[in-house]
Every structure is written in structure tokens, then in C-alpha cells.
Amino acid sequence: MDEGPEILFGIYCPPHPQPLLSPDDNSGYRKLREGFELCKTRIEESGADIILVYSTTWPSIVGHQIQAHPNPTWTHVDDDFHYLGSMPYSFKIDTDFAEKYMECCKDRGLHSRTVAYDGFPIDTGSIVALKLLNPENKIPACIVSSNMYANRAETIVLGKAARDAIKYQKKKAVVVVVSSLSNRMFTEHINPSEDRIHSAKDDEWNKKILEFFDAGRLEDISQLSRDIHNQIRVSKVVAYKPAWWLAATMGQHNNYEGEVLAYEALHGSGGAVIMLTPSKESVGDKEFDEDDVEYYHGDRDVLSQGDI
Image 1 (cartoon, rainbow, N blue to C red):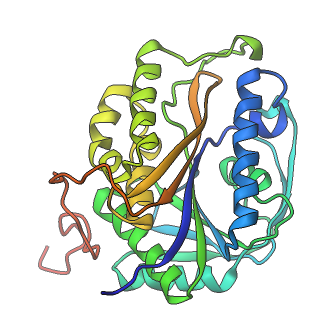
Image 2: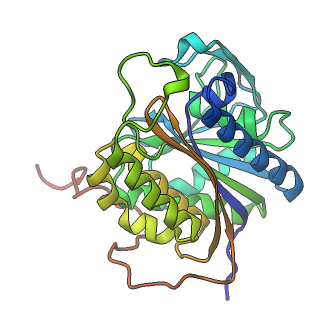
């Protein structure tokens, strides 16, 4: 039997800067910060060779971009929460892995490229995740964008290309998805002490998702993500692409031990810190409705070279 890549565990965490910049403004922000810190400790103890980050706050338009600058360094200010202050960063990027991931994407039919120039803006979600999960750059990282227009097939293949690269380089990997649950935020400034989930419906559906995560039912979340999106009405980049990519990268099954470390409001959105660890036990697989796909062949032949 062909063995898969060595993925130690996965982390699902929110992109908003409050746990990094203002954790004491709200008890919920502090709980999220503590969740990040527990993940940080487990990463340091895991013997991981790489942290692979898929960030929904790094949108790409054409294809998939992969950060390949060996040491991106800059100072970032969040577009929505600029009043919280600056986020200086300096990261250690695994450039060899980034190049291999790009090659694996192309081998599976995806349009992909690396970016490696001074001043290329790192997004808020990636900064928050790496500064809290890997603050001393003890482990090299890699960051991949979330294509705004990619469909399910393309996103699944992007995850499988990540598996290919991890396996080829024989890395021990921690996989991180940076994404909100519900993403309806308040449109006016609120007192942080009064922060709450924007609506009762959002809160209800967030908790349903967390039940699946807690039970380790990653592939079930991937399969049901369209339904979830229809209920909580948020951007598809936030709602279901992270689940598709995470399942395709870690393994499309329900054999995980799930831990919900924190779930709190972030200016109305739903933020959670979750860990998924591969397990030999499963809650049980079902006959999934969504098709699987190994290679991306384009969307409805819109780029066909045939007669026009």
C-alpha cells in the first residue's frame, strides 16, 4: 500500500488581529490567544519540518500564488482594524518546498507561480497565524493563496498537490488553515467588551460546524460545506474552500481526533482555534455525494483551443 505524506496535525484558526494585538480587550480574545499558544507548544514539540499555511485573506485572481521569498520582512497594518496598531513581521520561508509545491500544482493541471520579491504584502491572516504559532521562526513556513474564483475541483486538486510536495520532500508537516467560520462583521465600531456573534443563526451554524470538527469529521465538513455556505451566507472563499483544501491536503476521510480549543466572536464574526490529529479510529464514513478529482482540466472548456 502506498503511504501518504506525514502530516502531523492540522490547525484551523481565525485571521483577525485581535488575539495578536489586543488579547486583553475581551475575555474571548484572550481565550483565542490561549488556543493559539497551545497550538504553538504542540508544534514546537512535534518535530515538524514545515508549517504550510492556506490563508483566505490572501486572495488571488489568476491561479495560485505561493510565497517563496526566503525572508519576507515588512510592517503591516490591517485594513479593517488599523487602529489596533502595526504588525511588523519577518518570516522564514522554505523556498525549496515552495518551488516543489508550484511544480506539483502544474503537474496536476493548475496554473501556479511563486512570488519572491521584497515588499510583497503578506496578508493579515498569515501574519497573525505565523506570529502566534511560530513566533521565533523555529520552523520554516510556506504560504499559499486562496483563489477567489476556484471551484471545488480546483481547490481539491490544490490540496492534493500539497500532499504530493510534502510526500516528495519527506517533510513532517503541520497544516494550517486561516479562516473565519461565519464572517458577518459589525459595520460600525463596537466596544470590544460588547463583542458577540453577529446573529443567532450564525452562532447556531458555527456550533454545528464545531460539532463536526470536535468529532474529527473533516471530510463530512468538506462534503456539507455548500449547505453550510447557503445557511450562513458568507463569501465562498471563507465558507467552504478552506474545508475542501484542508481535507484534500490532510486526507479525505473522518479519521481524526478533533479538539475545539476556543470559539469566540471577533467583531461579529466567528473565530475558532481547532486542532485535527490523524487517528486510526473514525466516526464512520458514509457514501459521499461530492465527486473526487485528481487533475484539474479547466472549467467547462472555456479555454478550449478548438474553433471559435
